[in-house]
Image (cartoon, rainbow, N blue to C red; front, side):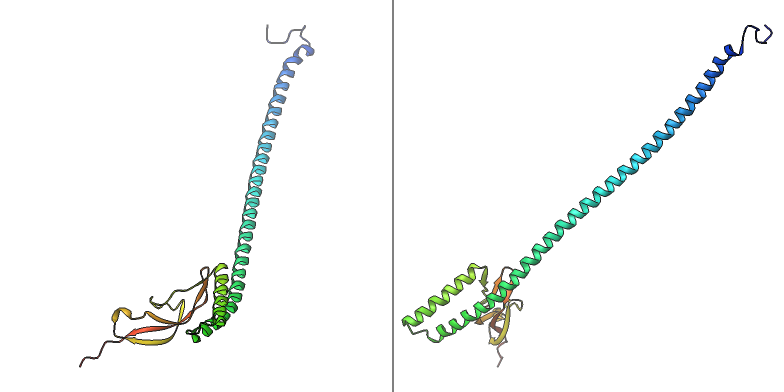
Length: 196
């Protein structure tokens, strides 16, 4: 064997080796194409996952914003209702003040008319309190300009009474945490006694 093909080897018998080489090349190409296709599909899948996550976050944010908006509307509605309750209460409180004036001017009178006025005043006051309106207690306490208006001043020689409310001219009221009408009061002012 001199390296030449034998005469009994025909091109047909040589073909399977070439075919196997070509088949190997085409298998590698197919495998490379499949690997490329898999990589492309994985990239598309990852992009789709990112987009789904992005959309899910957007939906969560939208839902959160919607809930916050609903809560804000509810708070605003409650605030507006409180303002309207305060406006109605002020009208009611003015009627109570007028009844208080009548009762103050007829303290010694025990007639049925005065007793009827007192009953009406007490009834109106209890109905106001049932709606959440409460009367401010300011007499004997330090003066607070947030809840009372100083209408008068009284000089006091007692240093501990300085800036304390000594009298109430008109009652003050609050609805929840909001002052709907400040009290009108007389405030003590300390003045040191003169030394002789």
